[in-house]
Length: 130
Image 1 (tube, rainbow, N blue to C red):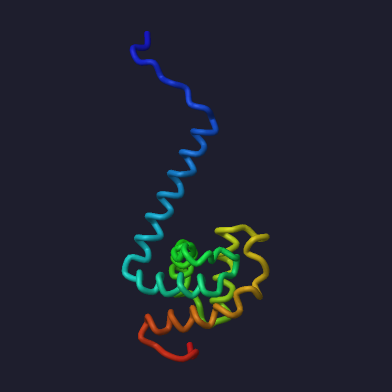
Image 2: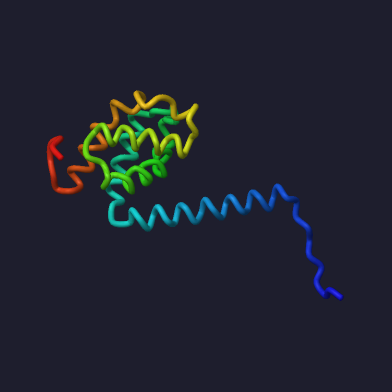
């Protein structure tokens, strides 16, 4: 005999909650990995907002590219130059928006040197040398 009656939730609601939990955990993970680099995340987010590679800049949503910036910051230690940054930035956008919305890699040519420069500066380095 069951003393407590369980309400059955629709599968769609359960799936939505599961996805929300995954998003929350992923965000916590990104925040933990970038905790000491929040200034760099903000600077890269601002550079992405200015470049607006997928058309999200509505002038009021300045944090729109924060998750992508976190993803990029996590990957930057493996980059050897602006070409790598272009590729990893494109990859981050494909991850977040899908191939169609992210568009071609050429869309990230203009912002890659800016991100590379911000990265180098955050490491106490200058110029484009590796």
